[in-house]
Image (tube, rainbow, N blue to C red):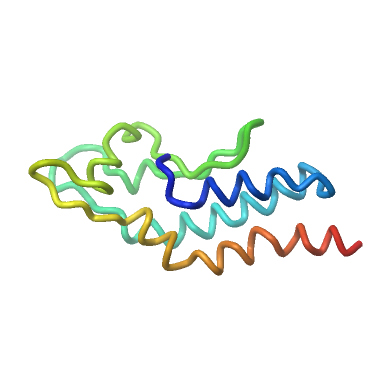
Length: 118
């Protein structure tokens, strides 16, 4: 996924040494699911009879972290997001993140802060 701020925050929170990896992943997954639910209605739908990006969007939890990914349409989503010569940029992913950034940050830090407080 391109840099839309979500990965930056995930990387930052992943470096907090006092918090267990399990709590961090739970927080990141909860925030990613929130972001996904806000993003889905804004994902453009193709007029062609193909797989649509919104039908390919999911949260993926791996050993490396938590990501919001476009499965089979992973190559194409960035063209709609950033535009190209004959296609206007729609900024649906970055715009959604910016719109809900403070709520995502609260979700990502709530469990971590509670764990750090004891």
